[in-house]
Amino acid sequence: MIRLTNIQKSFGKQAVLKGIDLSVEKGEVVVILGPSGSGKTTLLRCVNLLERPQNGEVAIGDFTVSCKHPSKRDILTLRRKTAMVFQHYNLFKHKTALENVMEGLVIAQKVPKEEARERSLQVLEKVGLAAKADAYPSQLSGGQQQRVGIARALALNPEVILFDEPTSALDPELVGEVLSVIRKIAREGITMIVVTHEMSFAREVSNRVVFMDEGVIVEEGKPEDIFSRPQEERTKQFLRRITPEWSYVI
Image (cartoon, rainbow, N blue to C red; front, side):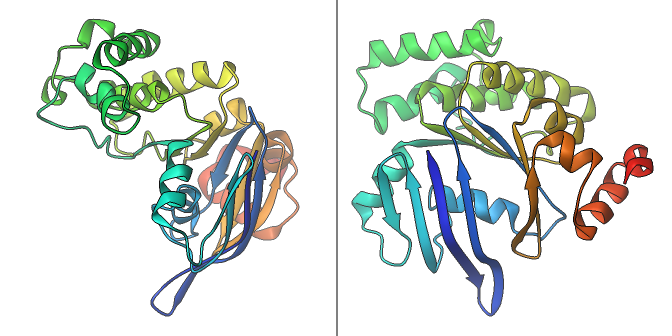
């Protein structure tokens, strides 16, 4: 369903992505792990061309874009197939939760306002925030703001949702409510690519774990294999640092 081919991205002279190949099947939940600076967020942002690779191809379904010279129309078409949940929520501060969710439907998809309102209320209900529809971001906790961000993504009915460290900006006591919502939508078969440091979430929810380091995919596989039987030394070192309770098995 999603295919990245030979994705290369540099910032100046620094190569950040070194010819990445990655495929994600429909309904699959793929978690990307790696140390800071490994290229995982850059890779995620290349899926919808928020970051423009210097080389490679991105395909979603039967639509393929060459990253070297994409047209504005191709970029727009690709982005309409995706939705993104950002680390820092990216909500409009002067709009209510409901208006934030409606925005993409009305502006980008040209959905009539009444239909957009109905769809937005439905997804706010799904993330447990129907009662907060008229609240502004300043009146919401960080966890609630992120759930609005998830509702905004769901409302667009995308082919894939991209999550960029959706809990890293949250206070520890708020992480659980956001992960609970992501677990819920994962069970509904929505295709997701998630960059996260939440190891228990990756182990429990993902169909596949991809470990990146220094701009390449070092290892990928089922979560039980990556966490319990990693094959590559770099993967083992990362897991020892970040999950000491599992160090005895690797």
